[in-house]
Image (cartoon, rainbow, N blue to C red; front, side):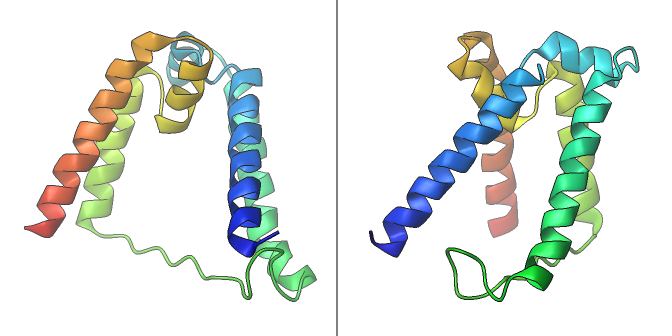
Length: 138
């Protein structure tokens, strides 16, 4: 099997697992997410906290326990820079999340569950990404 095909299959499997987890945790239901954002439902806090712990452990432990990643030749650093654009983008993302009750991953997963109303949210996400791309090029 070629490395490109192996990466594509692992990516597909990871995406399917992620979508299943979002569905199982009810994050694809905007009313559940909005209840969480209103501090009325703390179940998603456990889900998100668990995801943060797993990601943190993965990013911290994998490079220490493995010589190289399974499907690459080295671990890549993930630098993060905070600036005005990052803060504005985070604020807009949060406002959009609060207004519609979904972020991009759960919105796509919800389409698979038949919630076609979230096409409006995905259209807004796409429009925001397009405007940001135009602004960044200017």
